[in-house]
Length: 166
Picture (tube, rainbow, N blue to C red):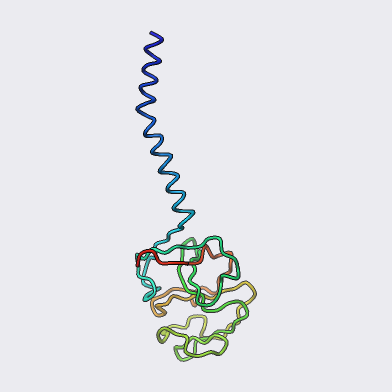
């Protein structure tokens, strides 16, 4: 009778083992994809024409401050949501929107399109140390720093490195 229980336990183990292995392998693959590739799916039209809604990009979560330059696309947290925008100004920069045109350090002509709503950039602004100003490429269909002000490095989740699927 004791031998019968042992045979039943071995048989049960042989049946369950493939499921346990499959779960462990699945968890490992999921972890590897998340850590090694850091895929992120773009949502919404605010980054058109650069990224379409549904585009899959690779992000670098191990960035440092030297990676946060003008024209870099970043993902940051705002009110618990992930936001994808382009850095248009960095610490110490002077910025304002004049006649629908974004001007950073008095340079003209750095728009994608004429900007209908300047938000807080209707008045001149100078970014403090550690502050970044981000805007969507689709300037007139983007809720961005014009609405809620500059972000900091601590808000940034990662730097977009590459497009996997457009």
